[in-house]
Amino acid sequence: MASTTGRPAILVARKVFPEVVDHLRAHFDVDLNDTDDVLSPQQLAQRLQGKVGVLTTGSERVDAALLTANPQLKIVANIAVGYNNFDMAAINAAGVLATNTPDVLTETTADFGFALLMATARRLTESEHFLRAGLWNRWSLDMFAGAEVHGSTLGILGMGRIGQAIARRGAHGFGMKVIYHNRSRLDAALEADCKACYVDKAELLREADHLMLVLPYSPEVHHTVGAAEIAQMKRTATLINIARGGIVDDAALAVALREKRIAAAGLDVFEGEPKVHPDLLTVPNVVLSPHIASATMGTRMAMAMLAADNVIAYLTQGKALTPLNPDVTSA
Ligand code: 8YV
Image (cartoon, rainbow, N blue to C red; front, top):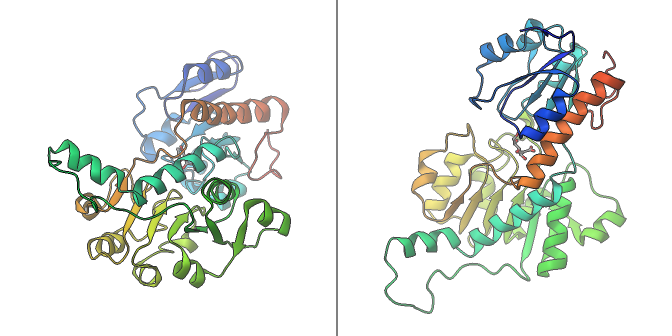
């Protein structure tokens, strides 16, 4: 539906906070998908007709087919720091600006990474289920004895902003030895600040007591942790994935957890989410959460506002705040 007021029309592809809608409505005709149902690619292409901007989440794919069907589109603003739902080659070829939401979620996501690590290492959900099921009739010395967190070795795969924030928590808060592997090594000052030591992937897998995955998804990192990598980890280790589904081979992980190849896992993201591999639902030594690492009200508001501000800044002043492809200037 094109604008009826002469103002530019935009689409908000998922439900967002009323404050964000009001902010956008000061500038644009806003079509809000307030059912919050995920639009199919065909529905999204249709709903975008006549719109020059769209706020997306990780659930909406922006690819050549969508862009070809909507040549009027100027900006796609993801309410997420990860943007593997964007086909950047197609977006660049179409001359569309893409934005994401870095920084505003770093500390909140790192907090959650630690929450998941703690819950996994200390068997929090497993023991809660036991209690709720009425099975707790006596205390015993080794009941739900888990893995030590303080003083242990924290391995981080992917050392961007969130990885660094997790490293600081581990090193400064829990006295952990922090090792990391990343495409590129941090500079010395940053390594010192994070108290983190660069190692190769094999050493990371071998030495980590807790291995935290924080790398961005791309096809190249699909199944970066599968049966072969799990086999290199300590049998007492935990694996935490707050990055993206598909980085871990979930089927192989479920087998490894059942066979106690590693002690436990904590997963916030899944291959093919919101579907979860059924075998993960039946193993006790895994903590599962529905992609909520950035979910505090303040942070989700900040993410949605930043996406809105990107659309407003680009469409009214020609310059977005956090562009992924800043060379595009078609607004
Ligand atoms: C988002 C995330 O909430 O920012 C990211 O990359 O994974 C989460 O913080 C989620 O992707 C919704 O778009």
